[in-house]
Length: 482
Image (cartoon, rainbow, N blue to C red):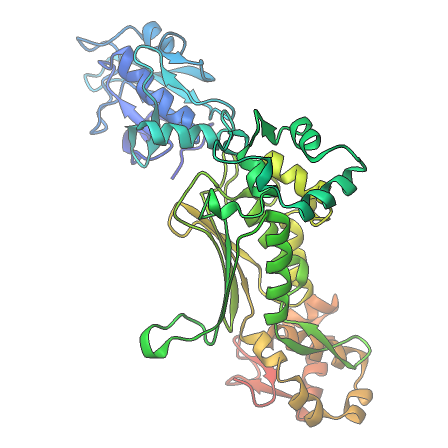
């Protein structure tokens, strides 16, 4: 667990497990090693380096023989790191293991959002990983520079490309959106997509007829499966499998049309008591997920592609590359950060992506409006981001709408009261409901919700489940469902 930034309790530091956000070291630590750990924390998510406590938790402070000067270690970031990260030193009075009044030093290290921090003495770069400060190889440093936008993969020149690789249809559409009649070469050069006759990586991805010639991993694969998991061998259950590897605007459009064609429809009880046909998932939710994957994936990561897996009970969109820089699973609803800002801006200019900045929060809102479970974001292997939209068992009940409608009948539906109709609509969306849940949904008391539910049971529309009238786990579900 990350130590709270306002918790400088020596007892806590002595007992806490070292992790990605916290390390403790003896005051015998030299400034070069201190710089190693400071760089590692700054290049990751920040954290605390506590000096004056041994690895086993013994508080030895700075009075012990061989201890460094506390002033020297306070200046370790300034003297030993380049560029200098933000470090706040705090001296904490303690009683050391020999019963003497002493001090420990807490270095509160902020994450570096725009630069990779190296050790000044040897230019080595370190990154905090679990409970260790690991030295990075050159390719890992390059990946970290991409992640912090100190260097952008999209802006690097693709030496094998030329103006002859440009897709004329995409280019014509882009110039129309910009309202210019300049030549293709002039537009690409002025927008930074063409340098010395070669396209940048962003230029290749956005405008070349075949980005896969230069980046075979720059593609989107959409797979429709029969069932809730992928089978192999004789039980292989892939129903449809399409790959889209053209310029990004065409890739987005093609994948969107294909996904839309594979989505099922089901019936939903509207406020007017009539069943209405709606798609399996709200379009904005899965399309925003697709656009985010295409726009923000780590294109420097070769060997993997964007995958859209359509199962019976869920839709998964997996994008190569961990979350960029300051974005975490916890703050991604509200934090805006683009790994590929040039690509993001250009897709908005194209007009293919009209709602790029609507954000993750609306995905949650749209799923809720369809009475579906919250979307989930995960990093399944630490090197990719996955959005899962779940079409839960509740939604599978909804797809039985024709049978339900015929069982209930139009006349029976028309005879339902306001609260009965609201209760039925709620159960359709959730699969089951308690009197308290329905009361909260209606904004009324249980004295209103319970009679409505009981009335639906008497009419054979709902089933009651419980051991007694006072059973705290009792609930109601659609008649005949489990």
